[in-house]
Structures are given as structure tokens and as C-alpha cells.
Image (cartoon, rainbow, N blue to C red; front, side, top):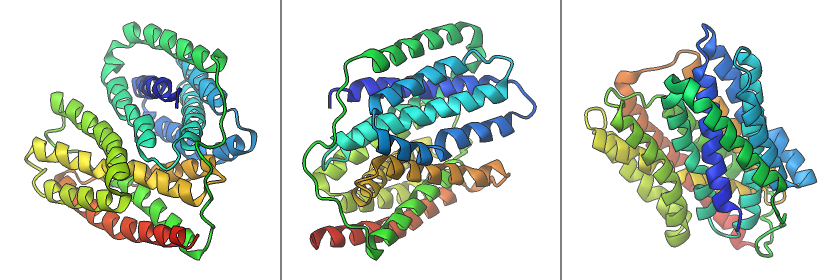
Length: 336
């Protein structure tokens, strides 16, 4: 998949730019603007994904998303417009790049983890450098325009699939599996906003972001090597144990969140297997779950003193939802 490394770099740049811009607005109602941004960036991927499924042009769509993100950086005094533009840019990039990777991944989870993972580091660093607005902004704009030009005007070949694949029929079993996958992603998102550990600051916050990124990449690699169900079982069990000691141990917390994120490419790939003919919609469906997961935190539900309990509970419930979903999917595949 020749464009994967380019999309990885672009993903880092887009998420860096969005976090840098949206968190850089010093406004009294910044929380409202962030809600609008997240709605555009994550909820709108579902309808936009359907459009990409219909019309294609995946790399061009991703490039246009990068371009919109660059344009959003000019809205210094219009935070609402800036957040909307950045959110749409983020959504278009993710849908375009995500569909390209899904079409090219064949029966492998690893490319999905590789594509999504750099965004975690981009988000962290984008928020970290907001105090250097005057210096970082022109550099970010330049890099985003360059990335947009490469994607929009570079040679790109749209492909249907990496290899001939028979779609899994959409039955009651796969419908239930899809609902379970949706709930797992919702839970992962909701729990992630509760991981406000007291030690999560400075260098440990940076290592926390690295762990999120590494978990997403590692989960795909391990799933390809050992099977999605086994990888999910071991990573969530180990993550649950580590979360028990995470309240006062940064090492345990960082390793726990790494394990917790190993299921990200699993849920993406499993949803794609069910909705093979609608990869953009399958990608957007799970990002809609991400958006819903941030709402409890946005409306004030935060319990930092019990962050470790949220981690343990999220691992346990995810395990109870994900393994049956994967079992239903596997059973349906075996009937083909």
C-alpha cells in the first residue's frame, strides 16, 4: 500500500493542526466550540463515508481534508468558523484515508492501526504547543499545504480491494456483532475521557500519548499474528490488571492504556468485514461512537479520583462485549 506512510504523516499533521487550532482559542465558551469541532470531525464521518463509498476518489478526499485543515488555521478571530472548518477537514481526511487503507488491507488489521495511531501523538503535541502560537502556526500552515498538495496532485491509483474477498452476509448475527462493536468503541471513548490521573502531566503525559499510539499499532500486528479474539482477550485482561495499580503508578497506568488501545484496529477491521461494501460507512459508524463517548465528559461527568476503576471496568465490559461480537462474526464467516 504505497500511500500508507504518506497518510500516516498526514494524519499526524492534521490532528496536530486541529488540536493546536481548537485548543489555542482563548474563549470563554471554548467548550461549546470543541463540541462543535468534535461533532464535525467524528459524527459527520458517517454520512461523508457514504459519499466516498459512492463516488470514490479516496486520496483526493483525504487531500481536500488536509487543505481544509490548513485553511482553518487562518480563522484567528472566528473560533466557531475555525472549529467547523477544521472539523470538516479532519472528517474528510479520516474518511478518505481510512477507506483507502480499508480497501488495501485485505485480511490484515495492521494497516488500520498504522494509519490511525499517529493521530494520538499529533493531538497531544498540538495541544502542548498552543502556548507557542505565533511561532508554530505559520510552520503548521506551510506543512499542511504541502501535504495537501502532495495528496491532491500526486499520482494516486484508487483500488477496489487488495484481493478478491467475498463479503460477509448481513444477517441477524452480524447485525448483533456490529452493535456490540459499536458499544465497545463508545465505551473506549467514554472511559478515555476519565483517565485524568494525577500523575498524567509533563513527561508522563507524553509517554501516555505514546502508549495510546503504540497500543493501536501493536494491536493490529498482534491480531494478524495470533488472531483478533486472542489478542483482545490477553490485552484487555492484562490492561484490567494493570489499571488496578494505575492510580499511584504511572508505569502501570501507561502500560494499561497501551493494552486498552490494542482493540482499536480489531473493532475497525471487524466492522469492515461486516460492511465490506460500505467501508466509508463502517469507518464513520465507529467514529460516531467515539463522538457519543465524549458527551458524558462534556456534560460534566468526571471522577478523577476513580480513574483506575473506570479503566478496570472498561476493560471488563469491553471483554464481555467484544469477544461475543467476534465470535458471532467468525461463526458467520465459517458458514460461507
